[in-house]
Structure formats: C-alpha cells, structure tokens
Length: 398
Ligand SMILES: *Cc1c(COP(=O)(O)O)cnc(C)c1O
Image (cartoon, rainbow, N blue to C red; front, side, top):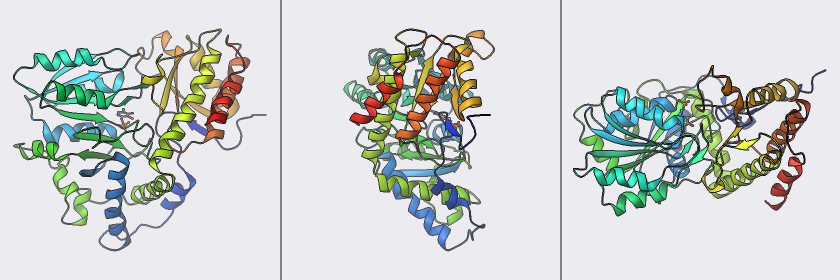
C-alpha cells in the first residue's frame, strides 16, 4: 500500500507545476514556422510579457534558462574591464557575479549572508565610494531562491537616485515574476530577467530580458556583442526568425501563450494576492511546528520573505528524512536546501525548501502542509501539532 499513488505534486522552486491547459496547448503537430498562426502568436506574446513585467519598454526572448539570460544581460551592456556591483543574499547573486567575473567584468560583490536582505546602508557606502562612477550596473536579486529572501527593489532605486549615482538597476526576477509583486517601470528598474519555468508555468527552456531605454543606450555603446546573445534583432525583429536567432521554440510558444492567457484571466493583482495568502498559510504552519522542535523559517522577518518559495531549517538529518517521507508516502516532492552548506556536509540534510509558485491553489498548499505534518509525526521529529489548523485560519481570512 502506498498513499503516494494518485496525482503527484511538485513543491520545488522551479520548474513549477504545469497547468493542464498549458500541457494541452503543446499537444499539437509541428507548425509552419514561416507564416501563419505561429508568427502571429509570437508577436502577441510581447505585450503580454511586458504586462507581466510591468514595463512599456522592450523584451528579448531567448531559447535558454535563467543562467543564459544572466550572461545575455551582461553581454549586451557591460564590456570586459567595466564594473558592476552585486549585493548577494544567497546563492543566486553569487552566481550572477561569477558569470560577470568570467566575462572579464570587474565585480564588487557584497555578501549579505544567507538569512537577510541586502543592507541598503552598506550598498550606499559602496556607491558613495565609487567617486568616478565606474559602477555601470547594480545587479540585484529580487528573490534569492536559495535563502527565499525578498529584496526591496524600490528602496534600492531610491538609494541610487538619492546618491546621484548613474548606475543602471537590474533585477533577477527568475523566481519572483508572476508570484511576488514586481513593477519594472514604476520601480525604475532598467533591466529585469526571468525564465519560463517558475511563475510563468511553462516548461524550462525559454528566458526573457526586459530592458529600458537606458539599458538600450548601454547596448548601443558596446563595441562588440556576441551574436547569439545580442538582443537587438530579438527585441526589434525584421524577420520572424530573428525573434530567436534561428528556429523558434514552437511548443514552448504554444505553452507560454496559454499560460499568459491564464494570467490575463486571473489578473496580476489577484495572482500576487493568491501567492501572498498561500505563502502566509505555510509560514503560519511553520511557526506552529517550530514552537517546540527544530523547524525554523530561514528568513525571520515576514516582510523580507518571498511569496514564491520558502526556505526552512530542520536540523540534519530531519529535512532529508521529511522530504523522503512525503515523497514516498504522500506523492509530494519538496525542494532540497540550496547554498546553505556544501553538499556532502552532514549539515546539508537539515535544509529544505517549499516551492509555492505559479499554478497553485489553496487545496494544493493545504495538501503540502498537511502531509508535512503527517511526516513530522511519522518520523517523530519534535514539533507542535495543530499547524494545519493555523494554516486553515490564514486561508479562511484570505
Ligand atoms: C531559477 C533561478 C535562476 C536560474 O534559472 P535556471 O533556469 O535554473 O538557469 C536564476 N536566478 C534566480 C533568482 C532563480 O530563481
């Protein structure tokens, strides 16, 4: 007997759950890529993607994952020898910084650890120290998917403006877009990146750069941009093939079209609110479990937590044991801890994450919380019971 039989549930922070409508949209024969429906469909994605990002400006689409657009953003606007500032709050800021370093770009990395957002006073001091304005861009991670921290992007914009520093403001929104509130133009972000497989509910394999006129001016100032990453043809195509610099990702486009239809039907405010309520249900449960025992939310201050992903601590080896238990006995896959300690360190088995991004509703979230409580009981991991009721209370209030 296994209680895991039935429809499985993926609660990892990307790829996220794919809606049936998205899966069905892909179930069709290979289309004509020279004219007709696919060409129109692709052009129609542009305004809807910009709507999700909150921008009137430009978008370039790539056959890529998030790592690819990390590189593409740099390749289009920052030359070797130029400088960027990277405030990092987990694994992902470090990753973007490493890409820049390997591209010959000078990187000033500020490490804010794994449990806190960036400290704007510290970022401000780094910008103030940059008297000749060598820093061309500040590479912020909106949500760091390893720590699950949420950074205050509007406050960072205000800081840069108050100091009169001309640096561009960039935001890595791979985890957050379509989950946590993000408004590119209203927040004064010059460049934002995301990928298809998290809040956008589409298979991994497409990624996007949104860029402002200021970022485009930086692009025009570049002596050389590698042809595949160059966003000019992609964002301003004369011919259909230029959108993707070659064959279009046909079935990803069908999938993305349907996902964006679903997002339009729901509306961004409702999407953000749904993620907020579901995330708070999980946090309420974790607070109860942790009253007695090792369960702990990685980010203490709720104002600094993402609504897309939650990182938790459960003392090794309990986190791995709980992940294994809910997978084997309940059909739920929880995320591994990322970037807290090295893999291979025995402490690694004390960290895990719950993805709650994209196509998730109240019964999905309550199901995850319920089976986590069952796992804690079955494994006799010390905890306070009754967390499911606490989560239900959050859902009830909405
Ligand atoms: C997932 C993620 C990435 C990397 O995306 P891939 O598609 O895995 O390459 C980058 N940044 C953040 C914040 C992410 O969540």
